[in-house]
Amino acid sequence: MRIEVRVPTLSDSVASGTLLPWRKAVGDTVARDDTLVDLETDKVILEIPAPASGTLVEIVQPEGAVVKAEQVVAVIETGEGAAVSPPAAEPAQPVAAASVAPVVTAAAPAKPVVPLPTAPAADASPPAGATLTSGQIRRESMSRLRSRVAERLVAAQHTAAMLTTFNEVNMQPVNELRQRFKAEFEVKHGVKLGYMSFFVRAVCRALEQFPVVNAAIDGSDIVWHGDADIGIAISSPRGLVVPILRRAQTLTSAQIEAAIADFARRAREAKLTLEELAGGSFSITNGGVFGSLLSTPILNPPQSAILGMHTIQERPVAEHGQVVVRPMMYLALTYDHRLIDGRDAVQFLVAVKAALEAPESLLEEAGA
Image (cartoon, rainbow, N blue to C red; front, side, top):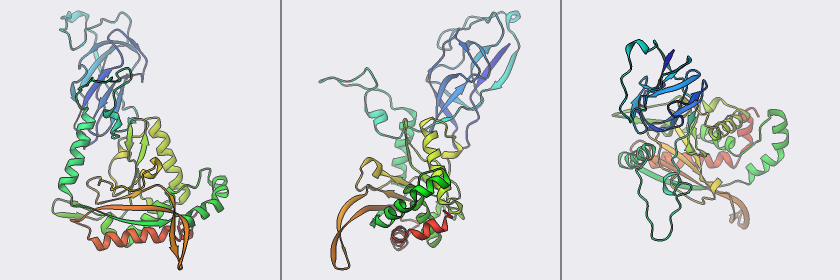
């Protein structure tokens, strides 16, 4: 029995994808759920698996083909004596009608989403075995993902009136609170008490005070969001991904830490779904984990604001007329000035700072 391998259903925001090199060749024996080929879309890379066990008898669409949802890309023969057809890149030989078995339509289920490779190193460095020596140059086509990322970044800068405001926060109160409760917290909840739950809770509180920071522009309309759907930037082997922490304002500290840990684990294992990467009303990115002291984050359209965290560094600061050394972090808020006035942006960031410098209430509010 011949079974068609089809492109899985894509999201409304993804119209098509480009087939990457086939992992299986015509004539190969495949098992159900074996990955046959990767599909590169504007947002993520999807794995197209075999819908049944058998022999790959035909590759309908070659590497580099642009395909849409439900389009046939290959054929698998599940019975014995499979008649192998040549790949689509070569002229196919006619097959007698009597020798063709009935074709069963079976759309391949989508395998886990592979994160979007947004890190510059993904395209900037030569692949393994292709290291350049002095005097050599190398030219290659920009990937579909890299092209789309470039388009979105340029579009964001051309469309939004981006402005960044800065502040700094004394992290000593958070550090002391973490030291005091981290052992008890981990025993009780089975997850470590990190920094992100404090920042997410602080952002949620500030968004309640300044809801315009959580809003977005859609044409001539302003879209207001009742929930804080926070995008959390996470580094993965293929680059940066931003899964969404839905209704973050309703989550406890333990739930936030567990969700982010789960996101990080599944990002490494390429098991995030397209739905988890879509939407969001505000984002948090932490360049501090890589040592960044200060940066200006770029908006993630259609969101109107993004908070940038940075490395914690001991610095001399003035307190009550005396110079003391404190663990300080620079915060950056990039916002769309078309919607958010400077006053609201600055006061929002001040509210985040104030919450972090009095963090006991953040844990209490979160039910930790």
